[in-house]
Length: 436
Ligand code: NAD
Image 1 (cartoon, helix red, strand yellow):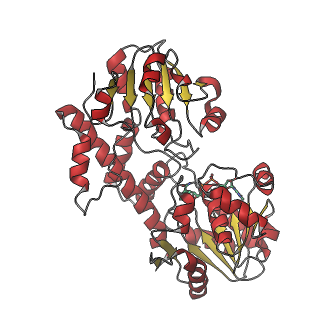
Image 2 (cartoon, rainbow, N blue to C red):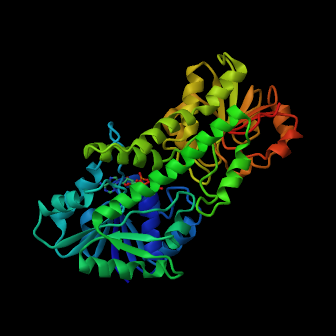
Image 3 (cartoon, rainbow, N blue to C red):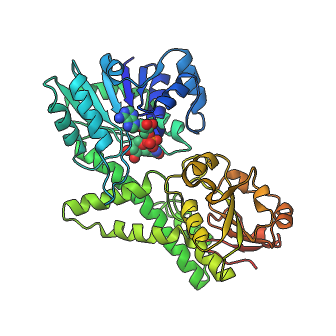
């Protein structure tokens, strides 16, 4: 059992804190958002993340999981302090470290004994040194800064945290190594490795992993775009490629680009990190450019079909950047909404979880429907931007009777081409033949 403080209770901090409590530790979560802290104290999980609620409730009930806005009392007894703070993109694409360094400075002012301070936020190479310097400016008390990047996926966050493919721990401090090793033992029981390395390598591992995955998706998106030009079927190409064990089937699904709170920002930040060291990550540059085009790919298809879209009405299925999350940060759907409304089209959207978040950002720029069929009423076409399971086996008769004409643009290839042929709809997807 260890006493732990987690600073920042977003997708990463709350899952981290809850899962450490679940493995028998005493965890205090700190957030500056007083409203969020009140809701959590009242037993409310403030984000949508499958399976989190059960663990959250259990650990609150058993008094291993607490919430506060007060940093000093939260860290007083904590042996380990996790920083799970935002690192949003600055204007030049670099990671904004002001949250992380601000809290580091605060910690420097209040720590009274040795602490292991663990950076879980995704940060550029060299940040552990900056965190150390910020703390050291304020105190002579010994401490160790560890880089422990988080690889969880939203929508699978609890499973990923409880059963990680690997845990990366960047530190050269022997005491911190021992403490981190003990803390993570319950999570690596089925043989996945705890990989120790220096802080800089750990920081770069996270950026390199995310950038590689973003590159894999983007490569497949370009293959899909070329399939459309030459009349190949990306599903067959994907199948043939993925069967090669060196390639594998995962992350080969083409669509309207990657989004979310991590890939776009981490890829840009690695690019910027390279620039800061006079190093040009040319692959990453290409990935960003291709993705910027890909996320509005359905716009090109819609314009090709309709020409002028002024006054047209579109139904949109999916707003979240991917299924099983309410996260809309950098969601391709929102870029699409922007481009369509700019050209005078109106949109009614449905998403199973993300509507409230979208309302907070774009308000009544679009209309929202209560379910996936209501959204179709009188629309000129249906656009699909997120592959929620609930969209995958719809009632096509209902779709056809509600739409003005039976036209579907699918940015996530959720329907099998052979099946859709019999449905009597115009169907345009990514990298595959258009069914007319
Ligand atoms: P988030 O925006 O969901 O949550 C951050 C939380 O920190 C918010 O609740 C905010 O109120 C709080 N906060 C801000 N300043 C604070 C302060 N001074 N003191 C206490 N709390 C403060 O962010 P997130 O998605 O959890 O991401 C956190 C970090 O983890 C980022 O660096 C991100 O890149 C990285 N990461 C995210 C994911 C993911 O899937 N979301 C996965 C891996 C890594």
